Image (cartoon, rainbow over all chains, first blue to last red; front, side):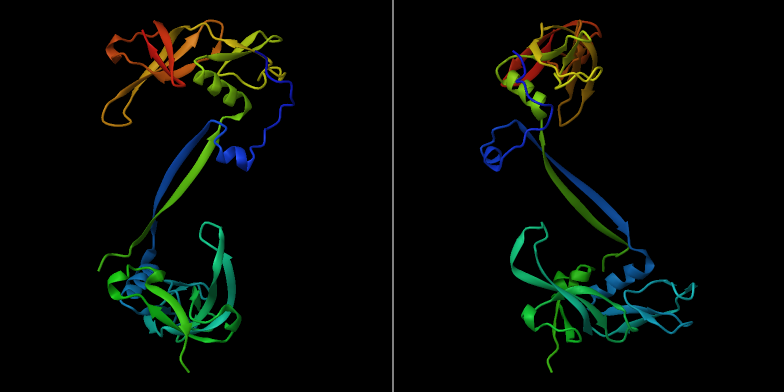
Length: 170
Length: 130
């Protein structure tokens, strides 16, 4: 009853062996639940998204309107001063065509992800979102886009309350 | 409107654990109704569960044999995985390092540390009884 004479190294499991369940494999599943405190600014931002509006925060010192909002201006080291509604339109600053699904598998239909500068917010302010309705090869930096909101009943206080952004009708 | 003071989410993690070369052989032994241990002749140590190599001298453990099933209860505890409590005991064996952790089909109040336990293997699973 001796161990086979081999080096003390791992044994590679081939995909055929894996599929045939050749080895004793124990499956495990864990669900890590978390609750992330949004803070005052992002909490309000999400509540406003649920109402179908995008809100920012203005700093009186530098005059910037920040989207997403923050309670503190990182340039002036001072608390920001008031809430400002901005528009649900914007400009594509940069974008990427992704062929990956959420589980890292290859997607047949690509998703266009863009950084969108929101109209009414200061230069460079905005967020990342999905672009739909325009073929990836037609998407351009500088393209004007508009938020496509989910129906009110389906909104839940998340950035995905905006389903996607689409090219603004010219 | 619900409060948006916190963002709740869950990260699902799924994975599969492989027992390794020695673990695989040990589990296959259990499936065949055998409780296997590995011996290090150099250190005079017998490992249960069996390992690929001795953790003292790092030499490969080539000699495996069945464990004499006369074990003793080293420790026990009551777990509550579901509605019914499950008593789990750690059985050890004279001259063997390590042991076997397995459910015991005996009420907690009847258990005494050091008492002799019987090891049964059914369908690759180990259980303990008095």
